[in-house]
Length: 414
Image (cartoon, rainbow, N blue to C red):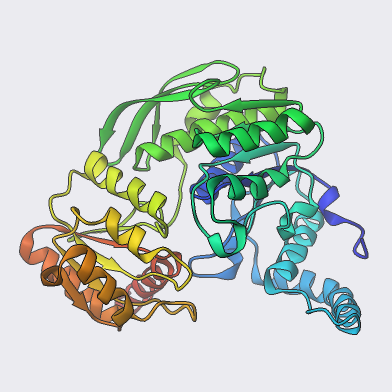
């Protein structure tokens, strides 16, 4: 309010869920940009640089812009911090300040529409001061149970808090408990509720080394023989959800996107750190799966899209995650697993993960190397000798660390 409610100066598409939020947010933004709108995109966390979290017309916000807008809003944040402390409350959190910064950056640009990814949950998330014209739900699963609830229904209730009066709601296929909660909230306050499998769907046609061909049947029509340069059947479903969100936003679900627009948008989609191939010798795949649901999607994609036989895993997990659940998903996948840890202060020590891994996967496959660079080098050597591949997973910060490592190596070789 003190800053003039910058989040009200543009239209908003609000995205929540457990897995697939960032990909879906990126897909929605890419379609809108292809339609000629000036777009803002807010995602979290970042992989390498903070700027990744805020993009205007698909490009991360420049350092200078971040600095200038921060200097503009900083006095107001300091006033609020002082008021909070005087009332005996904690100062603004990092994410709360970041959300304010993002809203101000997008208002200053200015953008026509902001595609806004929830940080955590929905109802009490900092991003929920914005009112989404469209509320988008990716699959809901167990994650952040210490903050969001211990059941699917409890987590779905928190996430359903982003549904605002008269919003249009679109959702991925959901577990029955989540679907019921989201549908109930939508019935009470939203204008409509559309869900994957009933109101829109995707059909895989072909998997190629470079991506996937598919058909979409969405709210406003059908789109045939599209191609995306991404792997994993879940990414096609994420795109179907994104298209439904855009159709809802622009025409209430009744206005079809031109074929050429969607075809161009699809072929230019990207989702860094999600089944991302960063090397071919050996084949090295990064995937930010950090909970059991995400790990199962990764396992399915490794089989369907890459047909890998006994790849080598590089694994690190953060302290608040379901280590046993993630490891269980990988039980029959990796020939060898190099347990390491990311740079995050929340990283679980490698030795602690290894203890659980030996119980889940058997001791003979487990190698413990806390130093990430060394662990990755050893995994690559093992994969080359076995004519196999390397899969780096278990933590978003681990994927970011590997991307940064590879960028530094490339700069040294240049």
